Length: 204
Length: 204
DNA sequence: TTCCTACTGTACTGCGAGTCCAGTCCGGCG
DNA sequence: CGCCGGACTGGACTCGCAGTACAGTAGGAA
Image (cartoon, rainbow over all chains, first blue to last red; front, side, top):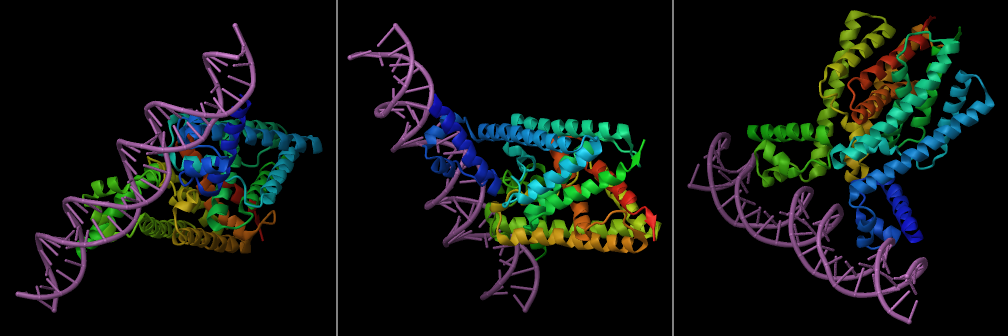
């Protein structure tokens, strides 16, 4: 029983690393089983097909990402109780985190799957959707709390503003991948941060 | 000679539509030749392999995109000579354009190729890179012109701000694809627009 | 008439996904 | 102790798709 759990997550580890480095399609089951030191039969014992692997990877990835955001903004909250400053600190921490990742951030599996659509079944796509909706909800909540104390200088749609966190991160990662530069994503986050500073620069 | 040009661009048309709808990998040469009503041999006569097709598609796409930006901001300039207002009008036009595309924007081939990296050779990747660097240059130029007349309220890196246009569009398109919603990309652009309004809200 | 360009058509290799299944190894349970 | 079921191994196979090779052809230009 224990070997099952071990092997399964070993497959996921290997697969995730490979997929983040070169994309899902370019990662063959052959090399995954080689890396995980199992047989092809063993792979298909754990995952019905590549789709099942993708789903499992996404589930795990989203959990990790959520936990990361939880932790990040919890730490920010400890440093400053004001919702605006908490957000600003959290974004700074996020930017720093992205910079520290030498290979660049786990290039967000989200974007990667979004652009390979038909390769995946409805389950994978729905998971993807729910993850982004979750982040929208999380950040919208934070922005609404901020707006209670700081009147936005311009009217903004809170859902869209919530999405902008994800969007800026995703967009930054796309740039980073395509440009082969180092810190585009973290720079973009810092620019978004100055946006928030300007937007919420007046007290009620 | 004429048939060559015709066939070649007919292949590119069919391929581009298919790739934007379902991704490069999911598009088979088989279906391209079926759509273009040529033989497999005919396809390989025009394109050495799928990589050559990708390169040609990217080249064409980037040209169109550049022409589009040229046109957009030229129209904006006609409406208002002030660089800031020209930029704000241009972004509004861009947002409107994205909204009007029923299937969503030609989901930016850039992001799509960035996340399938290893599928493509160095030539394709370099093209991708140059396209984004070109946009960076274009928008940085515009922002510098703006900054001459409007002191930025917060210090910003002009390269990063230039990248933010591309980043916000790319990020918005990722969200739109993943969420299967309608106007995420245009909403994100409009938010970015309010950022610029706030950032450059003081005259020199 | 000849030559070239733009193909068609067929036949082949090779790779990776996915299927099937027979056999093995091992820990728990009666 | 035996045997049962879960976690595999290993090999053989099908299928779809990329890419190669090459022989043949239709039609316009010189």
